[in-house]
Each structure stands twice: as C-alpha cells, then as structure tokens.
Length: 624
Image (tube, rainbow, N blue to C red; front, top):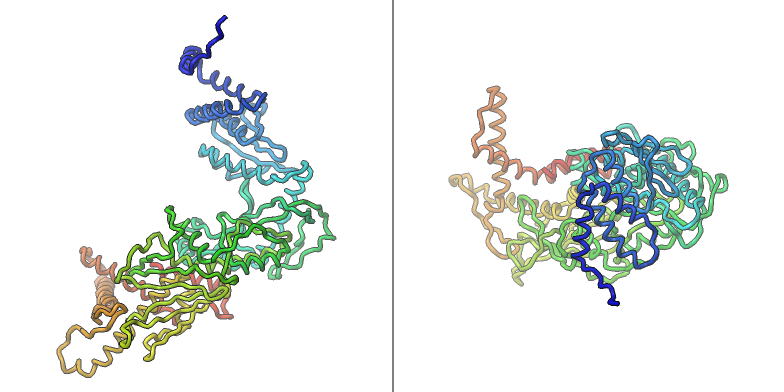
C-alpha cells in the first residue's frame, strides 16, 4: 500500500477557502479562539500558535472595534495577550480583566462606547481610572495594553499572594509618606515650576492605573519658558517610584511613618519602625529613571552611603563621554556618539565649535550610567532628589555644547572652544582671544572660563585671562548672573564676545572724539584684528549695536506717532522687516543689559518662589 503523501500548502489553503467561503467572520474568529484556548500538549505546538495569534490580531484591527461585540472580543484578545483572564458580566455590557492580585472592570454602552473603567487592588474598593477610560474611549488599545503590563509589573516579585499583597501595601505606604513630605513646604502661590525646582521631593504626581508615582525634579530655563507658554505640556526630568527584588531581606512598614506633619517642618520626624506594623521582604524601593542617567561616581557613592544599599554592575567611564551620548540620543537619531566636536548656532553671533574633552582617566572625573536608585526609607528621598538636581544642572551645561551638527572640516568662520573637566562639579572652557594677537608668535592668546556647579541653585563662573591691557573686562558677577539665567555655555560665551566687541568699539570711539569735531561726520573705519589675524572693520564689529540703535529709533518714532495720532497706517514690508530685525538684535543684548538690575538669585532675602518667577521672566527675555 502506497504511503499517503502530505498535501501541499497551496492545496490546504484552497481547501480552507472552499470550506469557509460561505461562513461569517464571527464563526471564523470563534474557531481561532477555540484553537488558542486549547492547552499546549507539546512544545512543537508553540510554533503553530504564533501564526494563529498574529492572524487573530490582524482581524481584530481590521474590525476597528466599533460595536459592543467587537469591543468585547478585542478586550478578550488583549487580556490573553498579556497573560490575564477575562470574562463578560451577567448583564452583557461589563467586561472584567482579572489577575491574581487585581482586576479591571470595564462598563460599556450597548453601542460599544466605554462608560466607565475601574481598577481594584488587594483590600481596596474599585476606583475609577481616568487614564484608562480616556485610552479606551479613544480606541487606543496598544497604550491600554502597555498599562496592563505596568499593572502586572507592580507584583512581579516571586512569592505567595500574601507576599505580593504586602509589597503593594508597603509601596502604597511609601507613596502616602512622600505625599505628606511634598506638602510640608508647599506655600500658597507655589506653582508647578517652583515645586519642581524647590520642593522637598520635586513635583509629585500620584500613581494612576499602571503608571507609577513620579517625582519631577529638574527643568532647564528653556523648559521653564516652554512651561509658561504652554502650561502642563513640558515634561522635566523625573524618576518613577517602584518596588523590586532584592538579594537581602529588609523591613518595610505597613502604615505611614510620617504622622500629622506640620507645614514648615523639616520632614525628618518619622516614627521608628518598632512603633508600626512591619514585614520582612526580599525587596527594596527604587527611583527609576525613564532613560538611563549619567552621574559622577562620587555622587553614586554618596547615594550608596545615604541609602545603605550598594549598587552593583556599574561600568565606570569618562563622565563627559556619557553625558554627550545621553544628550545626542535625545537630539538626533543618527549614531553620533563617537564624535566630540559640535557646531552650535546662535542668533546674532558667529557659529561656535565645541570640542568636548572626554579623555580624562582620573577617578574623581569618571561617571557611570544609572537606571535606578535603590532605597529603603522615605527620609532618604529629599536628599536623593537634591543630589539628582545637582547632577542634572551639571549635565544641562555640558549638553548645551552638543548638537546634531557635527564639524567635519576646519573653517575660519567658526569660533572654537574646548570644554575640559577640572574637578568634581567643575569644568573649563578655553578659547582664543577674539580681538588681540600676540605679535611675537603671530598667534592669539588663550583665555578660559571656569564654571563651578556647587548645587542646582548655586553656580559660579570665573574668567581667567592673560591679557595685559585688561581687554577682557567682564566681571565674574556679570558672567555668573548670565549663566544662572540661561544655564547654557554657548549663550554665556556669546555674552563675553559681545561685551569685548562693544568695549573695543567704545575705546576706539573715545580716542577719535577729539578729531571727529573737526571732520565731517562719517562711518568709523578703524580696524581691529580678529582671532584669525584678518582685518575686521570696527563698523562691522559694531554693526549689531549701531543697527540696533537705528532700528530702535525707528520703532520708537513709530510708537510715538501711534500715540499722538491715535491711529496707525498699515506697515509696508520693509518697515515690518526692520522692526522684527530690531527685536532680534535687542533680544540677544537684553541679558547683558538687564543683569545689573535684575534679581540676584543667590540673595538670602529672596523667597524661592520669587527666585523662580524672576528666573522665568528673565528666561523669557533671553529666549525671545
């Protein structure tokens, strides 16, 4: 008897087409689900389940889940994908997605629209979750599936149901203590920006659904401006509060430790663990970064000393190299991590070229990438947040020297700067004198600016010069105030160069005052040497200032005419261009002109809220 020959794939597909051509989609989908629900008898069947799952997913997407039955089917399929159970309620309009530790109740209308979504955790009553409700009403099932994964991650610690329930209670207890800490120094009128920069734990956002509690602790001046223009849209640097597995057992309270906190208290009067109910678990709390964060090794050691928990698997590397990699991963998609020279463009200024030296092997200048920070007690969090703010301020300054624009060849049109580490929290910017030249060797002298980041709110700037005639006449107080308001190295260097150029022009104009009265008025044409040795017309060097004055005069006369006549004639194109040009020219000078009269953020008499509001106001002027 001849052996039976296996049918070809084409023959099987043709047979299936003939068999199911007259059947509706519902029966086909039901059959696929029955196949998926069958227990796996052998490992060889795993491969056959994958095409069935993919096929069902494609059918669910094609149906677009608009009716009640299709929405139910989509939720059922999604729960199976995530390893959860699901069933339909007795009334036929409620769907329950369940696990060992929580369940989600989804109530629908008869037309398939979602009416309410509730989440219930162990020992808690179901609570409406606005985030999940919004996602399901928008039919965003992909995002809803990610929330389900995060809910499961809350309990991803080996152990019994009792152990997992204790983990959830311990995490909830920590969240209550942190919420009490955040309210201790919250004063009337304290907005989100002030709370991010000055709050004990930053800006706290409670856990909703599967999204963990977040602590937002840093905003750059540019982000502060964006927040003022579009409130709630700008997301600063933050960490998420989670709980994970630990090699050792630790004691966790099951009741809040900060009882009846008083506003203005330092937030360190916690109850001892012996006075509350506790449990021993092989776990610890974590502050988890959204993206891995580069830090000084010395700061990491300080955190370890603070929390008492060692951090393993750290790979030391030059800190500047890690910061550049971190910054470029945000600014561009291309692989630019091997580059160390970047071109930064600023309005009303020559392009800057920054070379970031990352070759230092000194142990005090090395860093590491950190994904999460372990801790055990809520009292550690305020100090941890301050350390992170300090590191974020330093990283912001170094990141300001990077861009997606990479230097490939030498160009005389660029202003060159070299950024080098000095010590912990300190780095220098070396550059050639822009207006002087050493006649003996034919080369410009090198100057440098040293920046000390003492904390997130205390930044110092010192100018070191070898000039003999005092050409670099920029006070350290002036530079420090500029840096505090912009937290940008390129903007700081532009301020120095513009100050030097204006100073040189003023000196030349003063020396020519005696002869200008005897000669007809004309354009000043005295030459000054630039850093490349080429002749630079003083009229060209002061072109920005003179044009700004002339355009400002036009704008002022235009405004006076409007006030006197009570009406304004339509602007022609040239006048509109002149006024916008004047605004652009003046905006780059505003930082230098207003620094002497603006708020000094280091003053002890100023309130933190006033400091933030003043910084926001000056940042708006800077970034116009």
